[in-house]
Image 1 (tube, rainbow, N blue to C red):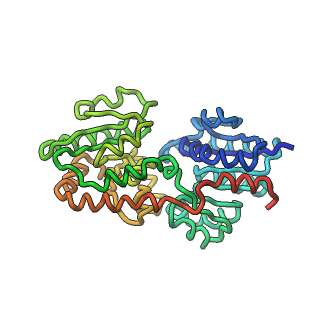
Image 2 (cartoon, rainbow, N blue to C red; image 1 turned 90 degrees about the vertical axis):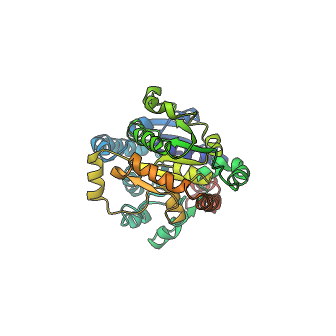
Image 3 (tube, helix red, strand yellow; image 1 turned 180 degrees about the vertical axis):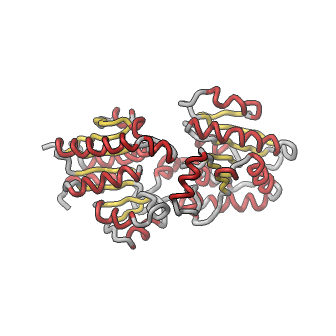
Length: 377
């Protein structure tokens, strides 16, 4: 009988993670039927979608809260579909609030849970470590310190895997080492703007980026490049076009990082890519006042938010959050960097360690998961 496997990729990054697993899964378990939540690329690869990830993804506490009825309905429907299909295994990717609840439900039904990209329980809700230990068969982590953290909390099978960025950008590693080992040319400073991939991010951050460049232009000469998300309307970027000398689309990130010296970036996975390409980056995050209130009221975590800082376990990138993410503050940090080029080069040298920090004991978990799907243990 053909086996079926549930996959939950509630965001685009989750879909990318699954696609990186798929070759190994197919090699170890060629006849398996995948179904669940994902995007167009997963559908093209033969995954039967119960929900499209566009229905699932949300940003900020207020949007999550408004979608609670939808998520509760989806939990029940996916659980029922598992019983209908007699699904015996599930690959749950990130998307922690939904996936942890689903994992607990399905584990009680005898479904074998493989959780890929561990929930950041260490940051938000440490008690979840014990829940994960009871619910998952195998847990896969991409941050260096996470394996020990989860093992200490009773998760029996924890594997560190290469961060997906490692595989995506490994062909550029020799060129990164060559280019970023050389000093920045102070007569031709190149600044890259990364305002994010969500409309709300771009609307909130671009005016602050613009103000920072306006201030900086009084002291320094520089060139400005920007990465524009292809799915967002071009007019969203209109107010900063007078400052932009070169524009990249979001499928040209490697080229953008190789050709620029510094970056202003929205918080997100892209900040780790900045570190991987040894691009000193100022990280910014702004959201609605209600989201800020909910965060500071209900979340105890007060550590760094950018992946680069988490992986290095120190503040390699300055972070400006909420009201501190102002154009003037960003300008002051840019000015501090550019007034001490030796310190800036030392930071670039430190960032060259990122390649080794995001490599794990497994290049891919696909083969392992496929073998376990076929086994009884």
